[in-house]
Length: 195
Image (cartoon, rainbow, N blue to C red; front, side, top):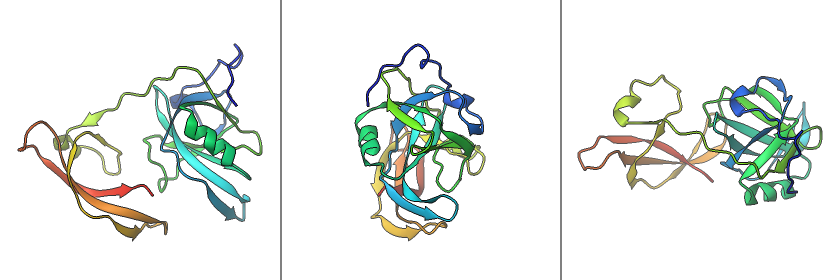
């Protein structure tokens, strides 16, 4: 599935330029937060398989959901490469239950219809993170995703809880120390652990 883009293929959007609707040009980015394949069934779309990941470039991040009848080989490709080129995706308002990015949109790619995902050898830089100090967190808007860098000093044993959407997740409370010394402020709170 590896390919070298032709000059016509090199036209691409940055993730931050994506607007709702069918994508006009491809987007290239790095894969992070890749999930497993799950089966789905609903009245509108029928049944099939889905997995998701976060696509990142130097401008933004976006959650990508990939739909199809048999996604095993595509998931295996995504597990072995770092950079992909996506075309034919559909951009829509992000579902806050699943969105782990600050992007207000998310992308759906139906590989059984017009969507394609292929490996790319193009160079993509990660967007620099805007890490915050714990003392600055109280100034952030509610429900805003915030990047915090620190050292985890204690983790309670995870326990299984059910989310509002009915999904079971592991929840652990952590204490994180930010900064070089022991007198640094501590952040206490729940952390979702990936299954």
